[in-house]
Length: 50
Image 1: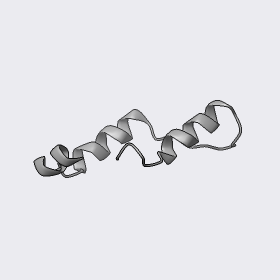
Image 2 (image 1 turned 45 degrees about the vertical axis):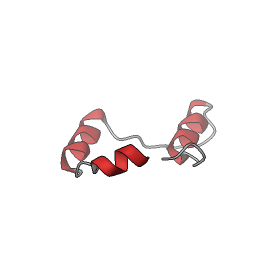
Image 3 (image 1 turned 90 degrees about the horizontal axis):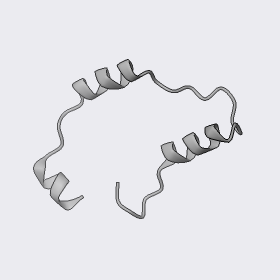
């Protein structure tokens, strides 16, 4: 993500912290870890250029 791109997940977390939306479902840490194991690693070129 670039500096000028809007982070929707952060916005939703902010709203959830303010208790504005109802029924916000957040994945468990275990599910997040499993998802990261199955994602392909980014190319080095992508990391250098953002």
